[in-house]
Length: 392
Image 1 (cartoon, rainbow, N blue to C red):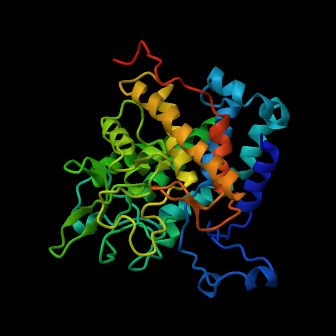
Image 2: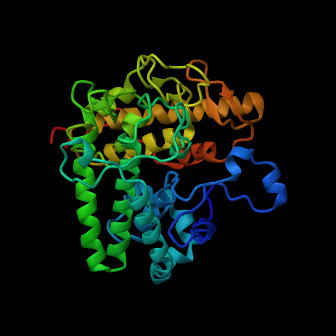
Image 3: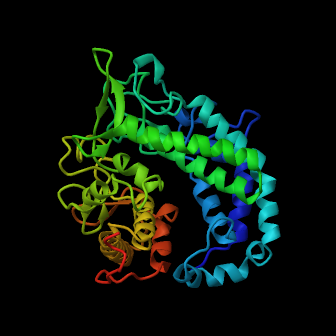
């Protein structure tokens, strides 16, 4: 099943046109009285300094890949996408694709700088050591138990909440946004913008390590301020701690990559027979309270794991073979389980139980759970295949 690229791009443009003059897009687009009647009261009032994950930039970066603005797609990927490319006038006539990108470029920049202005974290007040004194980020809108704006509602965060918190998932999203905008600016030959975004991108890459890598835990962690007014890490291994990998900020030759792959691949931590758990089995909060993002398997995050495993597995580097094997096994686990549950119940589910594989929460969840189809369409990579470049 191949989605229509033209329709997807029109949806992106439509969403961007909901932006206010400052660059904010409301999370809930409640259009009309019928829609309003179905939205819980606590979500009807929204705040123009609350952000949400900028997932549309993932689509736009993929579109830049297809246009071939900065790199050629692999032959395997080209074959996979051949039908889609033939359908798309934007790919058949690249000048139209570039015109589309140019038409939304001012909105993308406005949205990006809104994030930088409203979600910035505090480095200077707490004498944190980092490459850049500006590249740190904190989700606004958190409560004691939730950061709904992050999209990972009840995932464990520093306690108690503190205005000096820094969130590793948000700085990772900012890195992805910056990289995407830099690549778009390159495609449009906006040279000054390219240089500006390169500066931000380098600083974010450095600060992800400087502010969030915990050498003892060998993972990325949120940071907060303790009772002695010192910056400390709060580590809960799971989706949050692998976010630099999920957003492509950790590449094939990163010194952090091996630890991340081992964490994902460990059945006592994140790996299960049905997909990647949202929180480590070893975490004291695993499966506790409402247990929304504290153990269940989510297909959207599993797709991001899968996509980045593919990128590592198809690039020469020291961990290529491990990524190749994980890619093949994860694909089998997720696809077979989602299909098995669909066959048994007739539903694509919101999330899946990491112990049994059973679908749970919302039925008819054909939003991000349908990303399993994308996983099915991606190339086979035999796990036993060796590369002559593995030792490089």
